[in-house]
Length: 117
Picture 1: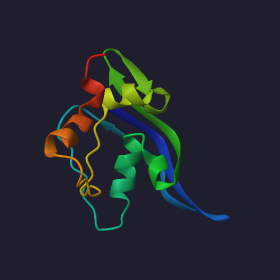
Picture 2: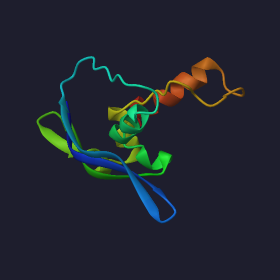
Picture 3: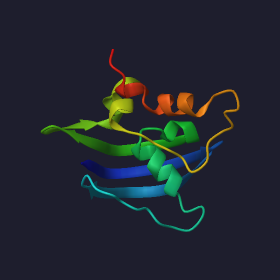
Picture 4: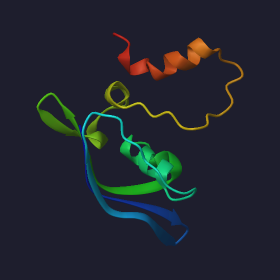
């Protein structure tokens, strides 16, 4: 289960700030969810934020993104990269060129957090 509480996303350009999402809250049960919208309406930025990857887009995020594990909720931002990779998988619509890797190596990257120590 995923719980989103009062999430706001801002993009800072020099001294100004553009708010992309303001005080968004939602609750998702473990099932198939679909996010629909026009081009440029912040779908990818929201998904990256939910995966704890907003900083890769230069976005500032406020609010809470909580994952339910067993009987308790954990804030995504308190998880280590390894813990996050065991709980969250983000597959963008397009990937950067990976000419030097074969398909098996690319798939193994996505399974990084699931490997036993």
